[in-house]
View 1: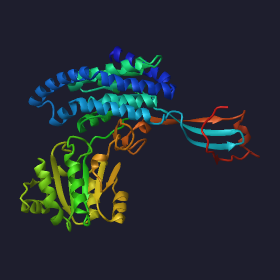
View 2 (view 1 turned 90 degrees about the vertical axis):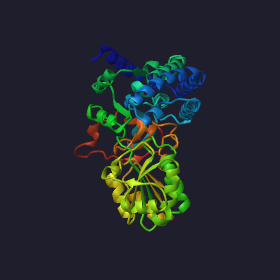
View 3 (view 1 turned 90 degrees about the horizontal axis):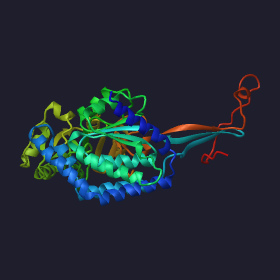
View 4 (view 1 turned 30 degrees about the vertical axis):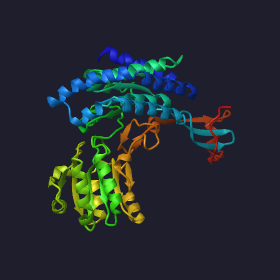
Length: 445
C-alpha cells in the first residue's frame, strides 16, 4: 500500500479529533467561506470542467463513458449556484453534534445521557459528479466528520479545482483543521482506502450499480448506499387523470439520468384505457422509448405511440435514460408484489384519490421512500430539507433514504454520577433503579 495514502488518511483521522470539537460558530464561518470561494472561483471551476468535458467526449465516442455520466459531469453557473445554495442551507441547519437524544435518571444523582457524535472518518468514492465534493464536504464539516474524497478520473480536473477552493476556504478560518479533508486521485488509491478499515469508519459510494457493488464486495468497512435505483410509479384504478399524467411524466422526464427517476410504470387494468394513451403520447413526445407488456402495448399502439415489447430483464433494469417499461396489473396487490419483487427499495409512488388505498400501499411497499400523488424525483436530500445529501441509502440499518447529516452521526452514552458504585445495586438488599425519563440536555456539572 502507498505510504502516501496511509499518511494522508492518518492526518485526516487525527484532524477529525479537532474537527468534532469545533464550535458551531466556527464551523458556520468556514461554511460561509466555502460558499464565497465557489462564487469567486467560478472561472477556475468551469475552466477545469471544460478540460474534463473535452476528454469525456472522446471517452463517450470510444464507449468508455455513458451519456448519463457525461451529463452528470457538466458544471455551469446554474450548477455552481446550486452548490453555493447547498452549502448555505447546511450552514442554516442546527448543529447535530452533542445533541441529547435521550436522558434517563437511573437513581438519585445518577443520570444517563445518549448524545449524538460524529461517526469519524468517512471515505467518499464517487463517479462523474463534481458537485458531490461541496455537498458532502459541507455536511461532513458541519457534522464534525473528516472525509477522504476519491472521484472518477473523468472528473479529475473539476474535483481538484473544487477541492482546492473549498479546503483553502476552510484553512482561511484560523485554527480550522483543513487536514480533515483529503483528496485521492488514482485507481490504486481506491484499493488502498478499502483496506484501511483500521482508520476509515464508513464508506459512501456514489455511482453505477457495478461500481457500488464492487465497493461493497471489496472492503470490511461498513458501506452506506444503494446499488440500484429501479423506481416505480403505480397508477391506481381511481387515479386523478391530471395528477397521473404529471407524476408519471415528471418521474421519468424531468431528469432521467438519476437514481430516483422512474424506470417502470404500472397501471391498474381498469384505468389503463383512459390513462395510458395520453401519458404515452406525452412521454413519446419527450423522446421516451416505451417498452410494454402485451396489455399496455395494445393500448399504447392504438393511441398511435410507438412501443416495443418488454423483456423479463426490463423489469429489473435501471436505465438512467429516456426509456420506460410499462405494465398493466389487475389490482394494487399485484402492483405491490411487482414492486417488492423487482424494485430496489429506493423510491416508489402511487397515484390515487383513495387515501385508504394510499395508506395500504405505503404500508406494503418495502422502499426507503414512498410517494403518494407525487413524483419519485422528490427523493432527494435537498428537497427533503436536509440541505444536501451524502447519498441515498436502501440499507435497513443506521440510515435509510436520502441521507443528510443524521446519517453521518452516531451516539455515545455519558453517565453522570456522584461516586456511585455497582455493588450498591447488586445482591441482597440491592438498591433499585428508578429509570425515569428526563427532558433536559446534557450538562456536566
